Image 1 (tube, rainbow, N blue to C red):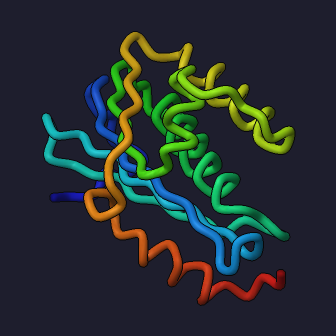
Image 2 (cartoon, rainbow, N blue to C red):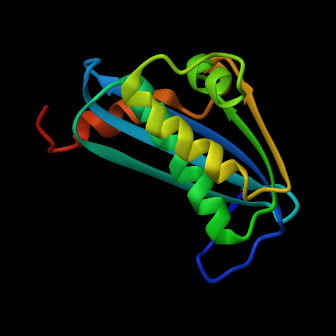
Length: 147
């Protein structure tokens, strides 16, 4: 699959896989996403490291938010998203309440970003079916950020 370059305009439909992790938890965090445009045969990967102390849930939410922002910037209107964080998926889908105060703002951001899409689905998948979660851990390990 080819990589999408910033100057290329994708179709309006995308499939997204996102992930996030901390090492230790809480500790240094990182996120990753992969946007796939099947109709074009392109993919757009990205990853990042969170500054300061984080949790697995914050890293997961940050990966989702980063992917949603990127899709909005690319003009995507129909999105199917897959992630292995049952907590994030169930909360954003409105099936679980957001009890933790530190996650409420991230949840609200996701809800507001989702309104930009004509079609939005968010589905939980087992970790082994998600993008390479170990790559997220390697990203944390290679970062120079302190805890």
